[in-house]
Figure 1 (tube, rainbow, N blue to C red):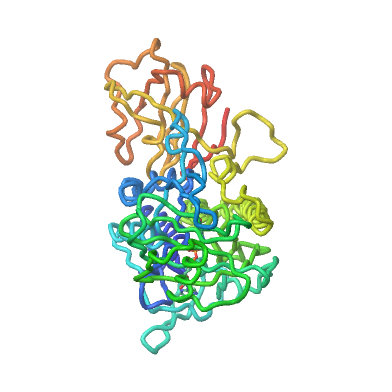
Figure 2: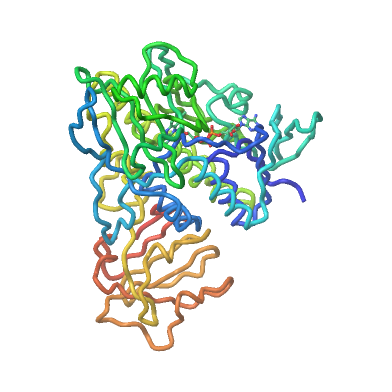
Length: 490
Ligand SMILES: Cc1cc2nc3c(=O)[nH]c(=O)nc-3n(C[C@H](O)[C@H](O)[C@H](O)COP(=O)(O)OP(=O)(O)OC[C@H]3O[C@@H](n4cnc5c(N)ncnc54)[C@H](O)[C@@H]3O)c2cc1C
């Protein structure tokens, strides 16, 4: 069968997109130039909005089981313990925000979980396979891949470059990648063991006079490794000995012996945004479209959400409806520009020695991302994130709005007993009733929502959270897009 979508790059962006397409029965190939899967911790902070995406993709349980909440950091200045800090104070879940806190998991492990889920749909990453070039016409894209010392020509309906900051796809399209590369700032990062340290905690070993000058060691879940990060004045080789030197110098101790360096790099600030995210049948997503400083932990999360925004639109296009494709760039480029602003501001603070750079504020959780028209100032309108709420199903069993949203469909919520029903294809329709109005006898339990069947489904807003969160009255209808944003409201 012809490849309907070819994805270049199997980082978090490419994997999420492949999953979004595969679960919609789109024929997808995902190629990766490296011969082995990436093994480093890199983007190790999963933001609350990404956890919601993972819930929909069916990987949340695995991500929660593998990861940890953000650790308490023990700060030492000049070798003296000065106190404990957190990047952000944990907050309690609310009815509309079930996963309010940052979750820690090394990037390579998140990628492994996404790959395992993708394999459930029969799709496997093709390693040692490099996208070399491509040409597009009105009907598709002809791509040249290199593997096993030979070239393969593939004809695909669409091509997505999820091929990272140096994206061949973006360069081939000649899309300007405006921004800055600041050679005066560098950061050494590495995953390493330090068995004398309690792995339940993170550490900040710093200079007594300049407490923002030091080395951070954050415990990585699932083993004994820490992700180390230290700003650099001059270029260094990312080796175990160099990291050991920084730990010795900033901790003032000799007993912290590092071992088993599994990944290390010197990061240079490269802050750029592609001028376009689409050219005909070819798209760029993730780092191929925007590169961030690691401050604020936004890069991986923004890439995953690019993929989540693009996946259902691309699936619709493959099935004949191309009307949604343009909205990918308009929605996601605006978000990427804003996110770049947040992470750059935090980087500036870090360079200025401002401790605020280490804190994660509300804006980094990505829950307030909205695709609404900026001129629209309504309380909850098309383009806003669709909130969660606890409900009961027609059998009286607890269920949540997010349970109704989970899957590749859109969801039409009709509030109030007189609400209308819809039989639109690809849309699951529910009437949300107040407890006093009750569910009509014989109503189908929503768990039985079978393909092709659209009898009325009822859910009960037992505590009133759904009506409140959606500012709904009798007869309000809200269409929730497959990616969990409000599509239309009446
Ligand atoms: C030091 C560091 C720390 C970071 N910390 C955080 C953090 O805390 N939180 C966060 O959210 N983000 C963080 N990030 C950013 C995050 O790692 C990236 O944003 C994320 O990896 C982007 O995912 P991606 O899939 O778009 O691209 P990548 O992960 O770069 O994946 C692109 C893939 O494409 C492959 N590829 C490239 N060219 C080709 C080709 N021609 N053919 C086939 N395959 C190709 C590459 O080998 C690669 O595997 C950090 C980044 C760095 C460098």
